[in-house]
Image 1: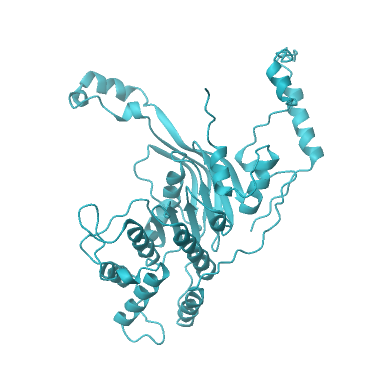
Image 2: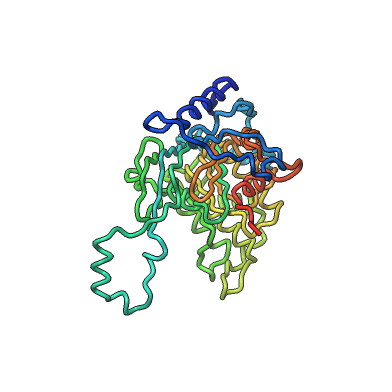
Length: 398
């Protein structure tokens, strides 16, 4: 866990004083006359003290004067299948299988897309309007930034929680960290998978896995057939000691994955979709989760993977991720819209996005004190994840 030293009160106030003294002077060293707000009764009624507003860069978000930025204790997950994960890891190590640990770092990451008015034509005829096409070619199309100046790091064995309202750029960030760059106008910034650039990491896309919000299956296959196929794709060339055949290794992996999400009873049921009757929506989501786990990847990105799951199943899924991340040295990145405190406390780091801008990144234990020091009131007993989402909600004006 990284430690970030905080600023003491003296240096913090002196920094603000220096900025205020510089702001009170024009480029010609002439004083600027400030607006007298004494006549505004709303300020006096609320008894709001005059405060110096300092817009800190994202890299300064951990320099909090009173926040506890000490290294929190190691997260532990009381998952029932953790001993089996440890046994499998020890067996693979004894067989000579090397750990495939891979971290992710990114800096000054900015993603732009075409604005809606530039990406949509009025009708089919307008697509062949040559004068308009020439005009659009000569001028730069309007762009919209959906991710602006983001930075962070996820080491092997760490879990990062990305929070933000829909449309804040969470899915885009996960796609960038999963090396999925298609469909965007420009992607600027530096993203590294270990020491590899995104172009070099394309040769190892099997180790960089993303579980999307929407599931896509062959609906007429059963759950058992789907997982049997997924498990066979990752059978090692040299089988571990004690495993006699490929079929035995595949059956063992499939049974472990089905039991991990509690869907062993659906092995003979079709997966289904909107047109083919099969398992329920929550069970289909769990099939999607274990299908990703069958890839034996090094970097996992989970895009709102608890959608359709009940609270207890979502917590078990988070515990499974925590246990596998610790034992196997995975780099896990998760975005959730509903993260209870039981799930939130399993994460090492948290990143909060608001309209593409990163307003906090750092240890999960220091996030709430940081926001409270800024003046945002936290209600005792409330979900910390929901508390962050409310901070990014714009107040309604009647």
